Length: 469
Image 1 (tube, helix red, strand yellow):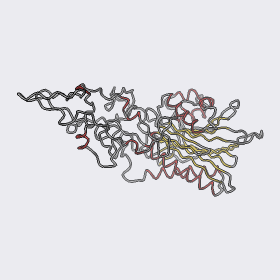
Image 2 (cartoon, one colour; image 1 turned 90 degrees about the vertical axis):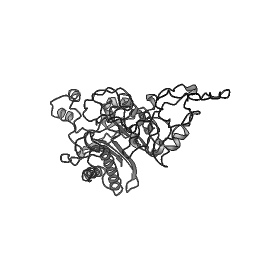
Image 3 (cartoon, helix red, strand yellow; image 1 turned 120 degrees about the horizontal axis):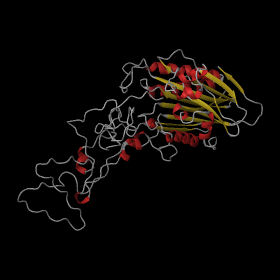
């Protein structure tokens, strides 16, 4: 969920000079925190990165394409790169070494001109001319960190993370470069996980400086040996403190509770209810940790950590969903001639207006208050009211579990079904990647998380049953 925008007087990012839009709290390119732009350091200027070219010509400055937002990293075990790409990456992959030395540069390469000194010998044929000396009285340029001498003198201890932007500064414990101030890619910027019968993808999006969504997918066995599949998706409330921790804690607690309850024979709908309660308790406990209220969230109010939750369980021929907040579950039949459906109702201002008959759905969701949530997990939430529903589909289909970072770009069930690839039930990970790409292509204004669960049943023609609580 996006925090209410705040106006900024800056037209360009102080970190990477990318153009800004009104209301940006962070640079969409490099993640620079625009709420507190520091003065340029006076005693430790930024290291110049322009490398001398051959024959003394100055090389071009680094292009904006080298800012950290152009690099994506997976959680351990995930696929690297943007949605749908191949390679893999891990948390250590942004420990980049400085580039190789440039021949003929570095301290001592340029010699100071003195009156009456003998002319320097001409370089051998084919060799580059030495760098020209600076004019008399001019200060020498900052050393290029790519030269051997500078590189040797500034070599950090083993294991130190180097900035992915300037490739010279060390990364502090808050994830920012001590030299140029750029925010570094985080493990959660892009995450993917695939099991045999469920897959999920989460992405930071194009406008947020970090990913505040989280998910958990897993499988277990019921007491009779039949399989059960679980998917939990959580969306941190951006206006609260530590929303990323809240979503991670809720997803983990709900997943663990479901696995334990299902394996001992608890009915899936009751297990979902217990999982949401456990997730709420886990998020509540974050507000009680001493000294953690606002460490890295200076632009936020002193609100308790909070998030929404939505989940789905396939077990014993049933599809059980549960939720608190405005994340959603959709049903998309494999046979697209059958209608899709949304299986959840938002805890939001817009949903309340529609339910009360005060507005139709189009009017409510066009209002600027539409996404104000009325239910969430957190110590400052109203009385917890977990919603659960149980369905028994009579035909195969795909269960889409997602945050509003996706459904904002495919709101109705028909729009979501149109965005889902036709083969998503056969390739759920690819389908999830495509859906994340759909949100990014639409603007990527929020974090995006989606889990896909193919629901396979033999055709029965006996109708479907539904029970809501």
